[in-house]
Length: 240
Image: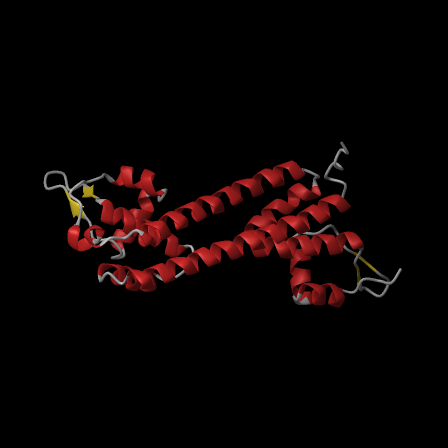
């Protein structure tokens, strides 16, 4: 059998041989033997591992992928699958919130914009439940100047109305594209000036980013499935 060279694996994945050595150094792949000449001896199993690590890292991030590899080494594939389901559930929630934001922008009427604010107030806890955004994030966004909030006169508690809810949904959506706070401020300013089309365009970029992440995760799961098949971690389907 022709030996598997590191350079061939690296070229197949479009990465460097240094990256392969880094995966090895962090214990992400099974131990690699060396020949009499000191060169690494890669097997077909290592190829499956390298492909799984690379493609999963593209969809789930290297931190998550590195956390999952010890479970695979121990044959605990179900643990990995449930962790993946949890990450994908979070992505789906982000998608639902982004769709809601875009729908809000599609239906945005002049009387709903900041110049015609609603008189119905909500607490920070209610807004957090409504938007799925932690109260700590809402406070941080206010501190960074993304939100301008009203406060109760007697106890100084924050007060939120429908406009604030829309702003928070939009901020959450834009943060999914890892945009800077300054860029988000500019987009919010566009909304304040009723330039809804520009804001919709920004939100659609975030949706595109989510779709790309979803596809990347799909490719990662496919590589995991191939590795699991090779390692006999997945039970074969039962024929009807």
